[in-house]
Length: 338
Image (tube, rainbow, N blue to C red; front, side, top):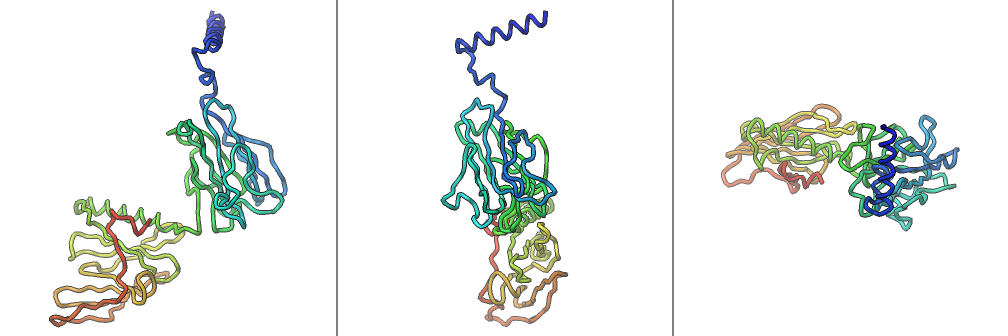
């Protein structure tokens, strides 16, 4: 009986398709799939794989040199575009090579250049119905986190090769079928410390709000490179009033913000001795005819504070300052971290 019903249902569906009541796209796969192949050092072009399987190698230290990507099981208005970051070339879209699409090779062949990063995106009227996810295996890192819909995956500026890649398409608003964590992309040409510092400022802002009540004027912050290593330290002022304000100080180490100490923050202003972004840092605390001037230092250890001036200020005299006040902004204003 069940077989008879199934046979009848199949016959009815075929008739509806023939007369156009049900569009053919309804019988297509729930969502399109993707196939891809890579050109690998010492191997050449590999066979196409799909469904999130790895193309490339793992554990052999072979570089990816090229990639082709195409869509399968189409029933939608979709295309696919991609570009790679190539040794000695950079991002293809920044050159006359441009984005590639629909099974065209991205990368190089016969030059021995490594792929370092990739971007992949869906195009067409139905592109917003799906997410395309991709993750890469990078030299000295291993498998990185998922990127999606045109985000970069891999590295730039490190000289690390890509060794493998996985790609999968999912319906919009769904996670990739294989969960993962970690950064999808690391760019040595863009200060990564800014994203880490944003999280610190936000967390201290929330903490300050729970303790003292939210305010748009809570948690002013500054950036200043005390050890002149190219990465500034973060200073976030916390507290309820000038009587108990202090600076929470962070540096950036091992790809994350690291708390390194505090210093007084009441009635205070930060100045650079020779410029407003790096070098020797001056902390001025001044109030009602009195001032204390400190040199604040840090060199891979605890925060140091050296008092260089501690005096009363006569009526009409100016408080100490240099020509280089350190810029600051409130937590709600992320302009210094963008």
